[in-house]
View 1 (cartoon, rainbow, N blue to C red):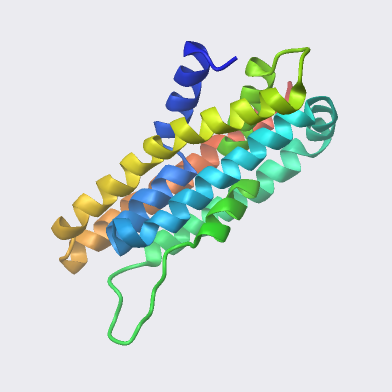
View 2: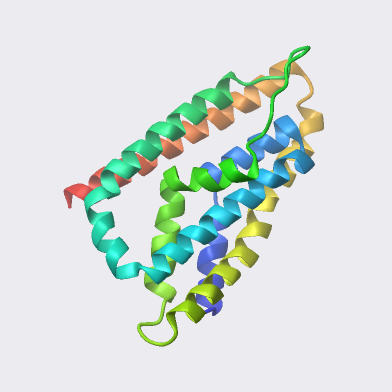
Length: 202
């Protein structure tokens, strides 16, 4: 169950660009590593909760997901479009402004509308949950394994953003970065939405 295939799958899904990693890179640039840690921990916590739900209630959730998958994806992608607009509009905090990164709770709750996170949790449940044996034991192992792999992978994106922070002190450079990140987030949302529509039509 916790084998090379599991490690490879979770690593690839955790470290490749997606809503979480784009938000973390933007947070690293705009707020630095230390202030982005609660958001990062929340993202891993939210993903672990999804894995726990999917592995412990696989049959029920899969039948439920076929009905609500497209509406959930549409809501999630609409939220991603809104986030991309917020990233695009963000800039250096003006005098007296108190901008804050996402906190741990919001980072965890964001996973509820993150289509990539649901896809990852569903695939982990399908591919790596054995058909028999102690389900609680297997779920616990999967969640621990997932957290241990996911956290270092997403940390890469925060550190990358934090390192870019000094280079982006100039207002126009920060604006350009936020425009690129907002655009990438919007393209990610569009790509996910098109994939879900195609899946629903097949």
